[in-house]
Length: 271
Image (cartoon, rainbow, N blue to C red; front, top):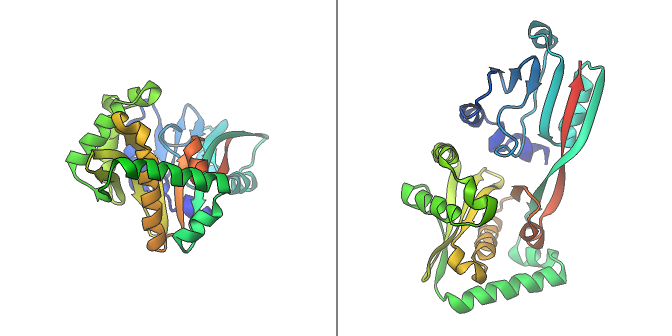
């Protein structure tokens, strides 16, 4: 998991530069962290950044910037442990925060199905059957073009509740810029009923990170989102990838598809 976190897109210099453009608070950036009012913090909102890079804070940085606190979110346990050993602090407060969900991929799709509980395996087959009964011709496709990006945004905005309101002008601009960075792309479920669902992902040499998704609400009852993820998992297994990372969020479908919870932590060091 350590390699998966540190080689995630969220630890890259290009991602950190992009996400920092959308931070409206006065701050300075030093390497892969920021300083805001004598407090060292992560770059980027926790709502947009799933994992954090390893951070090295030198005594010189602390002294020169009169640092009083270090506040980080979305850390894995190995990162908390590393900081505890390196930071000379008066106190540390460590709080369980977000959950990410990770799926380790086996060597075959048959092994993947066998790894699911009997109930989940039966449910997955049932949902796939409902979809295939309604759509006889469907394919997993991928894209980096603007047409499909616009369709993904439109589907997102048609969603109910917070998901539908998430894609405001600023977030659309952010996703559009992110989409242009290497490794980011869209998968979509193409069918005789239209393009029914999208998955906004980052693909590394070892696996894939599911950053966001959308579904055509008119066909939500056909389980097109589940079918899309299942097809992606099949593709990754055939390519000998090692993982499919659902990232933050405890939505039920992630666990139904075999994902396992990974605890993340928030920390506050008082100096």
